[in-house]
Length: 194
Image (cartoon, rainbow, N blue to C red; front, side, top):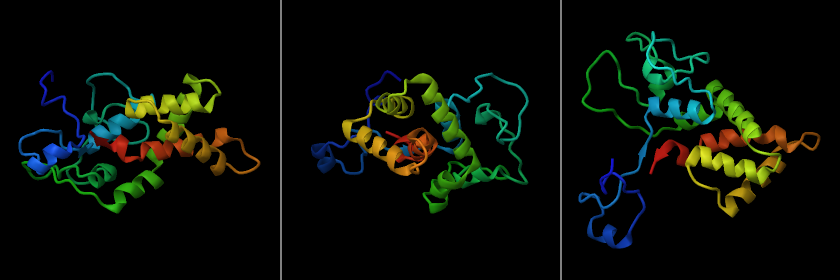
């Protein structure tokens, strides 16, 4: 973990790209999507719902199970639908590596899933508990939690615009926070490792 190669980012360097466009010499890290288990664990972690307890019996990966996905029950006969959607290997056969697909159903999962809606509400509640009523501070806190960096001025401006435009005239911007949290949770920056 302390090697220079391990610590590389996926940032592009034009000179290196000209010399080695396929990255065979490892001048940058290859960008990759989180696998199904890491994605679910990350969702639970940033929302504050992850149960850090180690070990124990395996349980169904449903709304009540907040343990890490590695402790989830995997059936050979009926694979969990969200795991299958994100390229979880078939437990009935052996495979040397996972297939990686990028299909529209994966993004629809982030729009329509009960898990995402629940975790977005939990993230909104966590941000309300961590930050003051200042929307800018909450947006900065959200970016720190989800992306490990501060939000740029443009991202803060867009976030505030979203919060005010998405709420109905009779509702306060506070009611838009779960929707904003859902947008952030479904962003590529959250789902991909740079």
